[in-house]
Image (cartoon, rainbow, N blue to C red; front, side, top):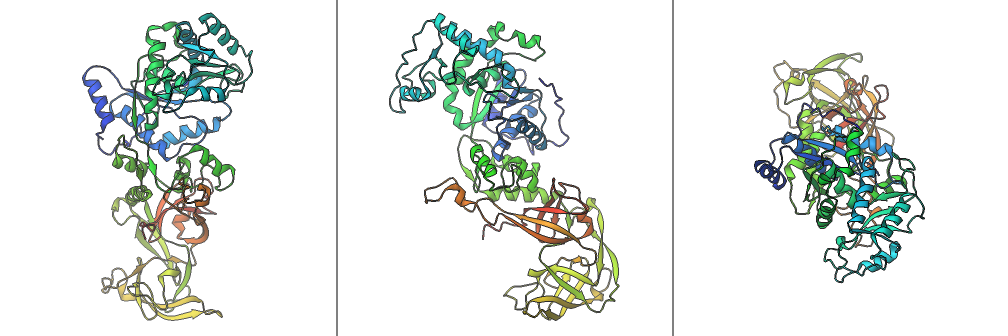
Amino acid sequence: MSNESAAKPADSPEIDAPRDFIRQIVREDLAKGKHSAIRTRFPPEPNGYLHIGHAKAIWLDFGIAREFGGWCNLRLDDTNPGKEDPEFVEGIKDDVRWLGYEWHDLRHASDYFEVFYRAAIKLIQDGHAYVDDLTAEQMREYRGTLTGPGRHSPFRDRSVEENLDLFRRMRAGEFEDGSKTLRAKIDMASGNINLRDPAIYRIRKVTHQNTGDAWPIYPMYDYAHCLSDALEGITHSLCSLEFEDHRPLYDWFVDKVDLPNHPELWEHMQEAGFRTEPAKPRQIEFSRLNLSYMITSKRKLAQLVNEGWVDGWDDPRMNTLRGLRRRGFTPGGIRLLIERLGVSKQNSVIDYAILENCVREDLDASATRRMAVIDPLKLVITHLPEDHEETLSLPNHPKDESFGTRQVPFARELWIEREDFAEVPPKGFHRLKPEGEVRLRGVGIVKCEQIVKDADGNVTELHCTLDLESRSGMPGADRKVKGTIHWVSAKHAVSAEIRIYDRLFNVPTPDDESGGKTWIEHINPDAKRIVQGWLEPSAASAKPEQCFQFERLGYFVADRIDHRPDAPVFNRTVTLRDTWAR
């Protein structure tokens, strides 16, 4: 057990006080005196890293607790050994904190295994559970269909004594995997298929990462989840919409076990130092965060990693929170998206461009500016001396003077973006062209006087002149030209690896295989491109995860793993504007 501090970060994730149907329920419950304090939990399974969909659940679970002066536990649903890993536990904790939240207690479902077992004994004694010998395939057969009722198992009417004996022997490890199952005795004719005698325990002789080989039986999610909520005194159990049909089962387990009135089931937890205040929780469902051009299936995300389609769970093309973080997406941008979308019970798919715009908006306010060139073309200012060097003072943020200024070296030979020159310019082209003028950011106006080409006819250099009267502080500094371009001093520029990332899938609904292609075939081959770029020196010295707007190119972040000042690596987070709209 962990009683880690519930300290709040200085910057609250909430932009304004949100008003949605869940918060209205919470307000009404407090006003009626139903609860004196709000308690929530975020209960991920540690069988993979969190993805963008989890961000909404985190925002709700932790945000509502904070907003109403309560607390939120982080509870790892580790009831499925063999698929779970301590690495994922640490990743989940890191992701929650990255989004700006801290938990009250760190709990594991495995902390409560003894309580679940004792509660199962109680259900058997009360005639609400039985041990079944049907195989998994036979149980599916007996379960019935959505339009027809199920059938009773031939083992459903075993006596309480026989069920207790068999279940205790299951606990002792006497039976083989899958040979017996403890099931709830509810209603095989129920219109809600979840109530047709669902499984409570299955035999699995698998080593558990927390409890070792102590348990050869493990509880099912629907059983463990609701009792965990009840044990922790959770007031509002928030979950996604697919669990709406599970709510009657949630309430059935909570009511039949009745933890508040049966302290013999959980008093040992308090003696061991766990804060345990059993109460009846209320489950409330909300729609998930679904974005176009993304998948949120953990199985498919794991497949991308295991089959080498991506470079790991934190690959910037992935929609895991670790991947988005490495890409340079910000907690503020993600929270802004969720805040603007709000909370409802209506499932929908949100355009990925909305997320990108929220990240742009957040970075526009917070990212300092730097100059970089990723497809260089040399520009020589011919009438400056060959050894000319000077240092310019440029603002770190054009919209916020509080960001201060930086020193940028300027010399006779510069790198500019190749696309900023056109020998035969298209209509409306306002950058550099033969005999044309353009303003160099922070320098002045240059005119293209001569083009130098190689033997194949490719442009290799532009020879230009600088209008000295157009420099800062000079009388002609306000002279108007239509275009402004960025640059870096060729002598001082630092070489960098620039990773150009884009959407992992090239169709809005990659899961839709109706066109005859599998979801794997929808992977965007251009989602990652690596080029050599040139940076002004102050960008190269960035710390890992420091974000910049590379002027006129987009938002970039120093890679949190690979970047070093002597070998810079930058990832493109997002373009300056939506390029997919075209």
